[in-house]
Length: 291
Image (cartoon, rainbow, N blue to C red; front, side, top):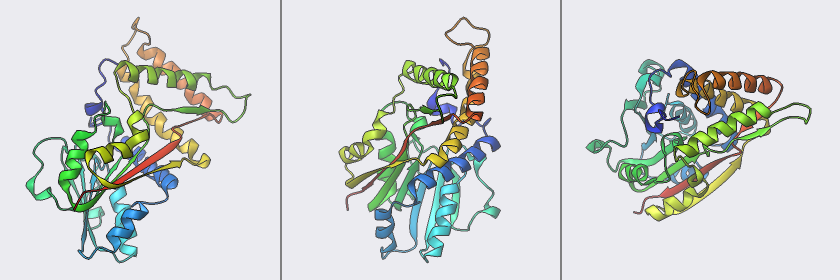
């Protein structure tokens, strides 16, 4: 795991159509968990806002699925909006010919300074989802600074996140073993710990927003649905299969590439017998920039 750099790994162009398909699955699973695109307090506020159209940004937007689905939702409620997505890797972006005209997707490293001047202070809502995979420590100030700069006075942040270091392995019955899935999760956790990567900040995301200066902070914790556990398991498996490149081949290290591939294969076999792996919950934290 010495070569693993969280901030670069997830932006690698090698993960294209396969990763994009996984992002569609992940979106569906999160929506099944949350039951909303815009958190209800935010949606009620912006729906009643006098200034139209709304301007909403999605950071690390991937293939833009949250924005395109939000377009349909807002349009069905006659709420005009300009929806802008930003991501460091545009390889996932669908062509403009297949996007709603009010959805724009642009290549942008949101942590590179300075932000384009035309983006400063213009958004009613800034949305973040599953950004924890590129945050190696509990220092959220770089991301929150960007959000603060993008928002209008009185604008909202909505951050949906799960703990990237928490994996719960369950078997449907005592007769179906889960030892290989347990071992795989143990290896992953040990690797993250060795790199100093922690995700406990997700449990207190509202506290981070409050300390940074956001007002009217709320946090909601939603349990993942049992009927989605298989989907979550397969979403993770698509990521874990690609991790083989991080292990040295034919090495005397704690685990070689060949050993990881063998372990992964056996873990997949357990999931085919009904074993599931999930992260338990999705956390949503919201806050408002002072007016």
